[in-house]
Amino acid sequence: MLHTLRISGFAIVDEVELPLGPGLNVLTGETGAGKSVLLDALQLVLGGRMAAGALREGVDEVAVEALFELPAAHPVWGRLAAAGLVGCGEAGGDLLVRRTASRGGRGRAFVNGALCTVGMLQEVMRGAVDLTGQHEHVALLDEATHAALLDAFAGVDRGEGALLARYREAHRALSTAVRDRAALLAARDERERRADWLAFQLRELEALGARPGEDETLEHERQLLAAAERLAGAARAADALVYSGEGSAAERLGRALRALGEAAALDARLGGPAALLRSALAEAEEAGRALARYAEAAGGDPDRLVQVTERLDALRAVARKHGGTLQAALGRAEAMRAELRGAEECGDRLALLEAAAAEAGSRAGALAAELSAARAEAARTFAREVRRELAALAMGRCRVEVEFAPPGAGLEHGGRVLGPDGGERARILVAPNPGEAMRPLARTASGGELSRVLLAMKRALARVDPVETYVFDEVDAGIGGGVAEAVGRLLSEVGRERQVICVTHLPQVAAFADRHVFVEKRVGNGRTAVAVSALETAEARRAEVARMLAGATLGPSALDHAAALLAAARR
Image (cartoon, rainbow, N blue to C red; front, top):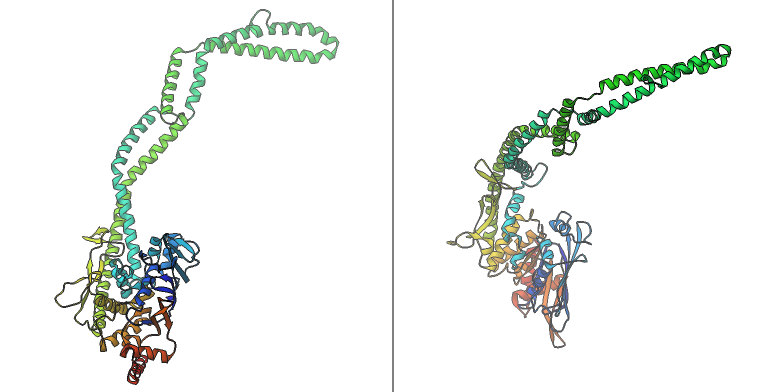
């Protein structure tokens, strides 16, 4: 709801504060008093364009401030958060919007003190106020909102397990399955080409029959085969020095033992060294025999050396191709086998995705059909209620209908396109006069007709429309008498659900006001300025309604008539 509108330096407004409240707020005054100027200022805080001549003559800055109170669930709070505006506090509560412009400078916009662009302001404030007469601020003229309003009217978007929520869940499941299936199909040819390449590479690896660590074992064997002659020579030379050669260590150890033999018999202390020499002799003899055997066996095998070298070259070639080491190549082979198994399982996954898409499509299609039936019934009820309201507003011949068309984008299933919100989009069409073709609301020619059509629709939608404040500037154009009273009553009924602000010249409408504001021009110091005053007392309201009835001359009959109108409105 809009609590307060403060304006300074705008057009013919010096400085005014427009107090507003819940229910029906009526602005009255002489023609040209400046009532529409106040609404022009209001549209600025909704993101409207600032006209070049908006600044009042003699002032340096124009400023318009609007204080709103919006519930936490209102979409404005979500758009503020999405826009990244800081300083806007928690969702729900007061929202202060300020718009300024200086002479010769650029304008600025603020939301709860946070600076923003006019484009951002226009986006976030969309849906806070319906300002009839300013088409960009009338939500009902945006055909993109019609389906959502119709769904709210039908009640398919409310409560636990709401039909619309269940459809959206099914549509998301269908979208996921279709997207995954398309991705799988799109990559199928590439997967097949890769599978052929993997199979070829794997055959090469498997044909080699490599074993873990085989390259290290063969490299050691190759080194031994290449050094066989040198190793055999070293063994023979060592054998000669230790055992088989003249003057070998074994021969010398034998002489030493013989020399100690008689001496050890005379002195037992020589028995220990003699035992050590015997042990050394035995080990030298064993070492010599082992060296002789090694020298005999280490003659080398040229054929084996060729085989080992060729095998090593093959292993190293594969290792270079698949990771640099034989261990990496064997790990790559296992990865290839796993990828090939995955490629083989792709067909199974495709079948599963097709089954999931079929199941989700059937569910979404059934819910879409149920949703379409609920919308069709709601459309008939909505049109009937609007026509009934229009009949009381002297537009009984106005035709209203809801047109359904396939959604602009969606998924095809069962010969029908299913969009994120159902199998159709909706738009409200009207034909104000007999013989006229049905056309969109935004193309209704007469401002007065459009205002009354919107009023009737808002009455039908008052319980479910997210817009908090309705503003009407031309709703009483071309009507009077009983129709004017019907308009006033209808505005009052809408005011029970939403805040309504209405500029009117009809006393029958003004009589229904919950808050009555008088707008006038005053001249001071040779300058004209707009002034507003809230008519708080019964006497003040009666006098203004009488003025609207009889003009400047207020006789007893005009006052009596005004009192009767106010009393009838209260009843």
